[in-house]
Amino acid sequence: MTIVTVEEKFKLLGDDGNYYGPNGFPRGVKYVGERKSVGFVIRRGGSTFGANNGRAHDTRPEAQAAADRINARSLEYDRIRLAAIAANA
Image (cartoon, rainbow, N blue to C red):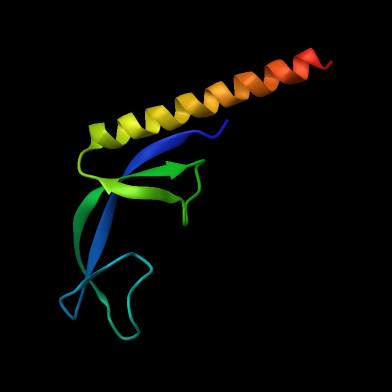
């Protein structure tokens, strides 16, 4: 079962006055130490890179509700799969 969690997502301010993702700074633009929240995202399976799925939710409770639905579907899928394995054993 893949567990999903909720994390706050930020954009970082560059010295050119624009906000970028943590790995999205153009060449020559430097981070100036300021960041802004762009919402809450779902992170799958403990991955630390490229694991934000879907859109950013406006609030943590909205994102948590979406994560709970994903976790419930994953758990149900695992139950069905284990029941099929047990039936064929």
